[in-house]
Image (cartoon, rainbow, N blue to C red):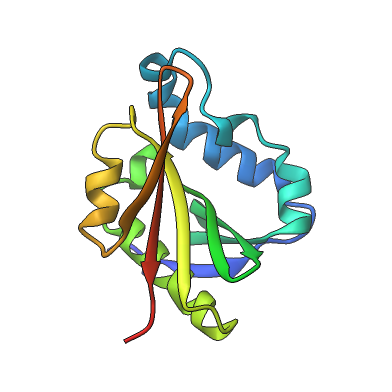
Length: 153
C-alpha cells in the first residue's frame, strides 16, 4: 500500500532537494525545447528562502514540489515539479488544490501561472482545471502562455 501524499513546508536549506525534483521532472522537456526549461536553471537555494515552497512526500520520499510567489494582487505558481515515477497519479491535482488553498488563506482571489506552449498538453491540462489563457508571448521557439484562475464564487 502506498502512503498518502503529505505536504510539508521546505526548510530554508533544502534548495538541493528542490533542484533535484525539478531537474528530474523537467528533463523530458529538454529535447522538445532544445534547452533546459527555465525551472531547471533557477537558483533553487534562493527560491526556498524567498518563496513559499512545499514538498509532497509519500512515505519518507519527497516526490513533488511547488513553489509559490506572493505577488501584488495574485498568487503566482512559479513551479510545479513531480518526479517521473510519481507522475500521472493525481499529484498535480493535489498540488493545484493546495496552491489554491494557500491563496485563499492569504486573501488572494486569483492564481496565476505560466507554461511553455511546446510542453504538449500543459495548457489543456490547466484549462481542464479552471485556468483560462490570459495571453501568450513569444519565447524561444515557442510561446509563454499565461493562465489565471479566479477563486471567487
